[in-house]
Image 1 (cartoon, helix red, strand yellow):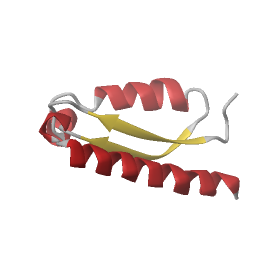
Image 2: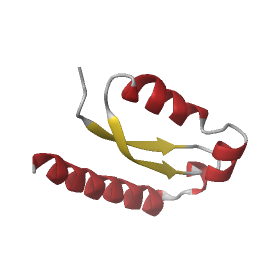
Image 3: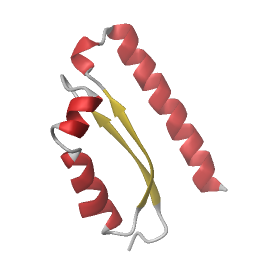
Length: 82
């Protein structure tokens, strides 16, 4: 039902680095969401972003992340509108 649709996955991690997520956990959450759910339903993933470890962030970091995600969403919205 979603064939031809695209998506972006943004993964957040409280106390895990990208290296640990990839090396130890083999990106298991990403694999399940991307392949087991979204691609199975026809959604093609155009990008995956990882944010973390979040426990090291302060309020300024959180605001910067929110601003970046908002900017990404606007770009993605413009891509799909064309």
